[in-house]
Structures are given as structure tokens and as C-alpha cells.
Amino acid sequence: MPTDTEQKNRARGLARRELITKAAAGAGAVALAQALPSSAKAADAADDFKPPPIASGGSRGVPGGPPYVTPHTAAKRTAKYGYKNDSGRAFGNGPMDATSAQIVKFVSEFKYPEITDKIMADMGLMLVDSIGSGISGFETDAIRAGARLAQLSPGGTLKSTVWGYGIQTTPDMAGYVGCCAVRHHDYNNAGMHETDMVPGILAMGEALHMSGPDVMGAMILFWEVFASLLTAQPVGDVPGIRGVWGTIDNLFHAPALAMAIGKMLKLNEDQLANALSMSFVNSLSLGVDHWEGPNSMAKGNHDANLLRSGIFAALAARAGMTGPAQPFEGGKGLWDVVSGPFKLRLPARVGGDPMKPLPVGDNRYVAQTVVFKRYPGNGGAAISQTVDDVKKFAKLDEIDTITIEVTQFGDGADPGKWDPLNEETADHSLAYCYARLLKDDDLFLDAYTKEKMTDPAIRALMQKITIQENPEVKYNRLTVRTKAGKELTLESGMYYEDPMSVADVNKKFDRICAYKNVSNAQRDKIRSTWMDLRGVKDIGDPIRNTLAHFGNPKAL
Image 1 (cartoon, rainbow, N blue to C red):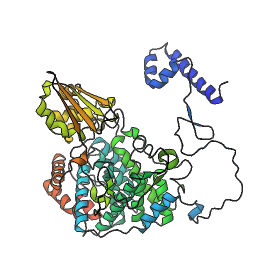
Image 2: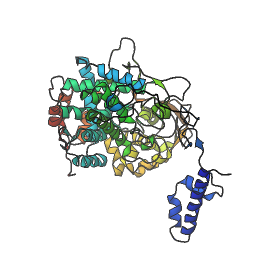
Image 3: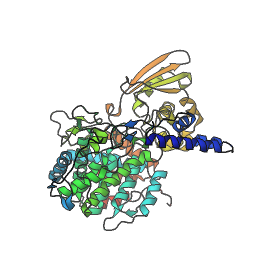
Image 4: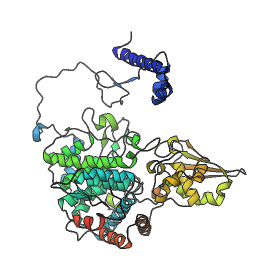
């Protein structure tokens, strides 16, 4: 006897089939069938439609839901009078979970460090690279759309500047547009793109008229919380950090930024806990934003939404808003639905890409260990290390096939990246980026024009490339076969195995500025200003003096 749910699903399937049958009499039948997802078409074609399996969890089960760490099925439990809420938190909120309390205590007690010559040199280089990456995204369609949105939100008591356009708006919107620009071409730091959050901290610093050293202190705090969450260790026999890489993207940007912004706003511990909770409970970013298939603007802009969540959560907490008291450990909280239990270490004592424990005697903050990217794009930057050997092995017209083995599809290595028609797809296309590197010995911003993305010579070279999943390879394995039968196999490394020098970062910055029509005088002023902020009393001054306007923007 079918259940109520099965009967409803069967009825839905019959209704869809009836709709297609009726439509088949008209010219729109093919279009209607093609508009349905392939899975729906397969189900509708079958006479015995079967509903999706019911995962455990929820009082009635959750179709396709996650395998919760704790059970949520009815167990005939009883609740009655006797519970006492003795948390003492504002507005009768419940007690913090232990993870929230640990983070809040660390943030509340954190003291901004003295900005030494070494800290300033490391963070100054990070700022120059981040600003350069922001300039590289300037005037692209996504950033122009963001700037138009910023015009709808004029700043009130808190005012911040949109880089390049000089628009005065709210801190979250100025940070949003800046983040979109920094992240746009995948040209900023390698790893989890933490420097995406730099525009948000600068925007809030401008709105609060904070000094250069205090703004850098907030950045240092952001990285410590971020790295601690990113490298949290699973506890017990649980799935581990389930979904961080495969389902949820850049999970910890928003809570770490909320803590940095909360510190800047001088929130108390109760408010910090609310900011922490509100920053991510309603703002988890799905990996579909850039994983498989052609990419939308959300490829580069999803971190910007997390930035807005972090800033808004801190401001909302200051205004008196409360969030779930136990966002990590509560029922259907992060641990239950996404990650499983984990342990944090604060300070993180890690660094680099990927973040690994720092050697004994290395006392740098995480913010000092940022790794920079040589090429704009995720699709081919790592495997670029093989280009010289391939070109020594054979001329391009001698190559018959190129097989690239990857650990798994997604994030650049999947069938949907073979016809890139926008920048977001092209810079995440392993096939396109590698073909461009082979042809040009280079990969730069000009690779993402429509003319170059559709270049027949590049498309012909892409046709020789096959990408295969092989979970046994470490990073990428490349096999080149020539028409004469010769064969070459190479293993590629990753970004952090070929770190950029200070000179490399400066050359990258110079090249971006030249391409985006930033004058040499302004370029040099930006670099000299942001390499040393220790004497800056109001961070808004260098923002307005060096970043408010640059290049040749068209009217929005």
C-alpha cells in the first residue's frame, strides 16, 4: 500500500506526463520536453515513477536530505515544565554552545599587535596584491553591476567608498563591490581566497575612521579565526568536515569576517556571539556557484555575498538583533547538518597554502603567510608548470592528444568548461587556460576577451585535450602524445610549490595597472601608500586619495 507521500509523488508524475502528452499535439512539445531536467524526463518516461529515497532525519523524513549526525526521528520523548534558561544573555537568548563561546572569548580578549617592520612588509605586500587584483576586475560586467547596486544604497552615518567609481555607500555595499573586483579573475591569493574579505575590513575601517594599525589588527584577527575554522579537526567517528569542499563553498569567510568587524565595532561577548551566529546560519554558499558547467557571475561574487553577511551580522548584533544561540552544536546546526563535531585551536598556528602547521620558531600570524597567484584563473594556473617541458617535447602542430588526469571533475575540470563564453567560465576552464598557455606562453587578463575565448586556433587545440577523473593522482597528471607516436607524461604541482617573490608581485601589480589604464604616478602612489600604513590616522584618507578613482570607467 503506497504511503501518502508516494501517492502525492505519483500524482505529480502523472500530471507532468499528462501535460507533455497534451503539449505533444502542438509545435511546443519538443521545447517543453527539453526544458525539463534530464532526471525528470527519465522519471516521466517510466510507467512506475518512484519517489526519491527518504533520508533519515526529521519527524517525517527529509527527501534527499543530509544524513544528520544526530537523529531527528520521533522517539516518543516527553517534555514538561522544569527547563531553566540561566544564560543571562540579552533578550532571553539561550546559552552559547561551547564552540561559539571559545571563538567569542578569543575575539573579545584579542589585542591588536604592534605592527613591526616584518608584519608591515608582509601585510603591505598582501594589500598591494589584493588592490591590484581589485583593479584587474575593474569595469568588468559583474563589477559594473555591483556598482549600480551600490548607487541604490547611499551611506548614512557609516559611509564607505566604492573603489574606482567614487560612490559613497554603506560599508557592506562598498565591501561587496570591492570583493567582487578582487575575486573576479581568480587573480588574488591562492587557496581559499581569504583576501576577498580585505575590501570589507577596509570599508568598515573607513566608515569608523580607524587608524591604519587598527585596521591591520582587524585583518590579523580575521585570518586567525578563519584559519582556525578552516583547519578544525573532526572529533570521533563522524563524517568529518562534510560538505566544506564538495557542497558548501568558502564556508568560514562570513563568520571570521563577522568577528573582525565585531571587534572593530567594539561589540561585547553577547553581541559577538549573535554576530557569529547570524553570519552563517542563513548564509551558507553552495558549491554550485562555480563547480560544474558554465559559470555565472556568482563564480566571482559568491564571496561578496558572504562578505555582506559578515558585515550585516555584526551591525545587526550592535543594533540589538539576536541569532540562534547554538549555531554550531545545536540540533540541525552546522555540526549536525554539514560538518560533524570538530575541535578548534585558537590561535591557529598555521599558514600558507594549504594551511599547514608553522615550523617551530615561526611566530608569524596567518595573515603574513598569504600565497599569491601568478596567473589570473583557476583553470590552468597549477598545471602551467608543465608548459615548458611540453613545448620542448613537441611543436603544437605535432601534438595529437593531451590527456589531463584530475582527482575529480568540478572547479574547472568538467565537460561544461569546453565552450567558455564568459570570463567566469573561461578562467575556470582547465582546457581553455591550458590551451592558451601552450599557444601564448602566458595567461593574462587579455585572455578573457570574447575574441580570444572563441579563437578558432584555441578551440582547435582544446579539441585535442581530454580530461579524465583519476582519484589516485595527487594534483594533475599530463600525458602528451604526438602524431608520430611519441609520449610524454608529467606530474604538475600546486601554486605554493612555486612561490612568488616580492619582485614578482610588484611586476604583476605593474602589469595590471598598465592594462587597466592606471597612470604610473597613481600606480606608484598606491604602492607606496599601502606598503606602510603605520602612520595613517584615518584609513579613509588613503582609500579616497588612491582608490576612489582610477582608470577610464564608462558611465554606469
